Amino acid sequence: MKTSHPFREWIQLEQPRLGTRVTYASDDYFGEKGRLIDPAEPVFIDDKYDLHGKWMDGWESRRRRTPGHDYCIIRLGIPGIVRGVDIDTRYFTGNYPPQASIDACISDEDVPAEGWLELLPKTDLQGNAHHYLEINSAKSWSHLRLNIYPDGGVARLRVFGEVKPDFSGVDGVIDLVALEHGGRAMACSDEHYGSMHNLNIDGRGVDMGDGWETARRREPGNEWAILALGHPGTIEKVEVDTAHFKGNYPDRVSIEAAFFEDSDAVVADSDRWQVLLPEVKLEMHKQHYFEAELQAIGTVSHVRMSIYPDGGVSRLRLYGRLAR
Image (cartoon, rainbow, N blue to C red; front, top):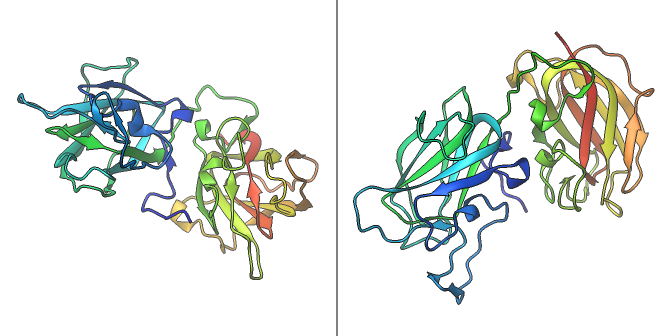
């Protein structure tokens, strides 16, 4: 069962599949810097050693014998506003850093030398623990620098936030809910097997784990997911892709949409929802396109996709035009 966290409504910007890379580490003698953003959960293997010593699933520097501190630079594949982070020290017990801070900058370089501003002040850490820390910044950043004091190991850095693209030069039909256009999943009834945030990732799903999938529903009703468009617009075409979902695809789907000026007003039972796509049948492992079936409801900012009664959907595309 996937556990929830305080930044569930935001996108994980550190994902390598979005193009994010760890471009520099002051030292990664014990643990290679790229492990810091590995999508997999960290593990501990009791008897695993390499040429440098005990193998640890994370970024780990050697014991520092000179003044200063170690740090790591992460270049986000898609620049975004950072709403929160998780500095995860799982399995690091006698070798975790006592404190950490995060700086951010905007740059075209892999390893920026200047322009850094403090995003998270120096914060105390514990060993073998998640540290969910809120970030108060409304600016979009391209790079983050994780500073550890003075040395040690961090299993994972998760970066939660949102994408705010520049639409000034955009015209014509685009996928209004695509991540690169600022779309994001906000809430869902259940995501036991697969995250709702997979729904608007670029490309088709690579396997059954790369989609949104609920547990088997044993009570009346149906499952749903709410997504915010990157910019309000009118939806002209919908794609619902059930790639890799064969024995567990939903029997049917419907989509409602609405315009909300305030994101706090977006709730599943709002009376603002209007039917965009009436309930239709789905098939396994298939891209379904709906255009003539859509109702004309004007400019919308959010959609609620309902699946009946449960199951998995790989991707949702909402093609339309920006409301100017």
